[in-house]
Length: 168
Image 1: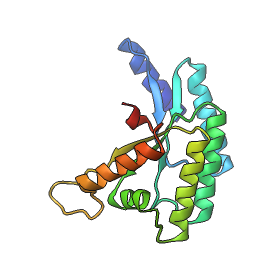
Image 2: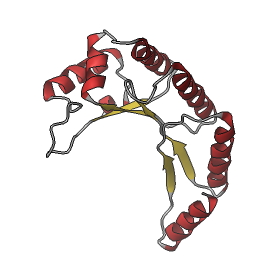
Image 3: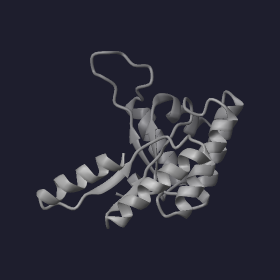
Image 4: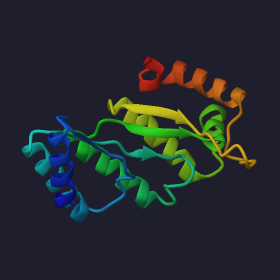
């Protein structure tokens, strides 16, 4: 990775550009990998460039067990403490819209995910949202309707007004 970073910086400088590095990842990794990520980010900063980590938060798929959810939270806090966490991103799928607006969670893991979202938000971790856009050629059950999105945005505005997209 260090060679890729050096190459990107070299190409940027040749084109009179100043690169910024944004790593979009799920940050579900142990302390050994966290140490390597920190080393990579530190190397980029030593070159004088900006680097941030922007993980994705998923209510219904990624956090398949409590251990994975706990690892995510631990890493969010770690990277925030190191001033590397820029924001957590959420994609508003049909399932996510339903979970956010219903206040009913079909299983304990989804309930825990919602509690973690509220907790991280309350701790000042910045969240941003985007909506899911399926391929127009297939009927995707995860594609939220315009009503789903409207209800979700109203819910988010009423309960989580500091979400970055809502500030636009």
